[in-house]
Amino acid sequence: MINGMLESSRGCMKEEFRMDIISSNLSNINVIGFKKDRISFQNILDKTSMSANAPANVTIRPDMEQGDLNGTGNALDLAITGKGFFKVNTENGIRYTRKGNFTLDQDGMLTTQSGDKVMGKSGPIKITGENISIDRKGNIQTDDGIISQLDVVDFENYKGLSKEGKTFFINQFDEPEIELPTETAISQGYTELSNVNAADEMVNMIHATRAFESYQKAMRTIDDLNNQAINQVGKLR
Image (cartoon, rainbow, N blue to C red):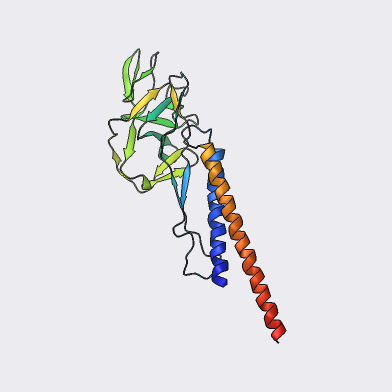
């Protein structure tokens, strides 16, 4: 019965984790460039441990599926179709993102909405001139001519990318940046919406809630059986 109680406890923890992730996905459904999270429970608890308080071992990874593009008509709104990330220089170092609703600061530097500098092949991008045009390869042109090219990069292995906040990724294992696939393209005047599907997440939430309730019911049943066994032993005495 102890093993049954532990397994049910593990099941409850698993579904609680799942519901937390689903709730986070749904709360960020309207965030530009947000990538939903997926969770793996292969070793959620150390099964050799007899303690229900054994440390959780959960793998959470972003789902890099393409989000839909939303036309805005803003010359500084950019979306990546296909693989790749915009490269951004933050106060904490280089970060990678799919959130491309950029702006210009007072010095004409291309930045994120929070002021982090967007990187070009030659460093931070300073926009001069009028009539900004950005082609599918990220070349930035104005009345002054071609002034820079966006440094859009990709990685062979996304397992080295760890999410920071809602839309930034850290290259935590220093995975080498690789050349973009030929099909990758930059679309000017568009942003990439989150890849969260509300209907799918609600279905997942229903399944997780039902599973959680089933594990709770199993725990109550086991507890009742334990109490009955204790009472029977007491009567025999």
